[in-house]
Image (tube, rainbow, N blue to C red; front, top):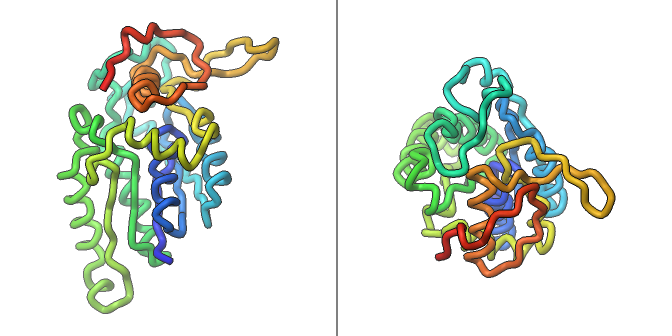
Length: 248
C-alpha cells in the first residue's frame, strides 16, 4: 500500500483532502503545524480528524518561532488584540510562503518514511488569491523537493515524491465538501475553519466555543456547504443571511 503524507490543519479543506486520500486507499500519515496562528482550536480538531480516519501516524509540529519572524506581516499570527479579521479576502490574511514551509517539512518526513505522495488542501477556489495554492506552485515545489533528493532517488535510496492538491485535479471547495461528507459524515462539522480561536456562545444551556461566522474563512465555509447542497450543522456565533453567500 502506497504511503501518503497529508498536511492536516484541522480545517475543512485539509480534512476533506485526507478523506479523499482515504478513499483512494493510501496508508495515511498526517502532519499538523502550529506556526503561531491565532487559532489553536484547529490543532485540536486536527487530532480528532486524524483519530477518526485512522491515520497510521499523526505528528503535531510546533514551529511557533515563525511568529517572531512573521512580525506584523499578516493578521493571522499578529496578536496585539486590535485586529479585526476581514470578511472578504484581503492580502493581510496571507501568511508569507506558509505552504512552502509546510511542504518542505512534510516532504522531509515523506522521504524519510518512503511515502510517495504529499498532499495539502488547496482547491480551485484558492487559486485566485493565494499564490502558494496554484497548480504552478505545486509543480515547482514537487520539482524542487525531488531535486533536493535527486542523488538518493537515482540510487534507489529515496522514492520520488508527488506533491498533490485538490486544485491539481480541478476540485473546488464544494467538491471537497461532498467528498469529505461521504467519508466523515457529521464529523465534518467538527472541523475548524475560523481564523479566530472561537467565540463563546450558549447552546442548550452550555457554554461552548463556536466559529465566529463573520471572518473570510467562515464565510467561505458557509458558502461551500450551500453550494454542495449539504445542510451546515456548524455552530456560528453570528448568523449570516444566506442571500449574501454566493452560489455556484
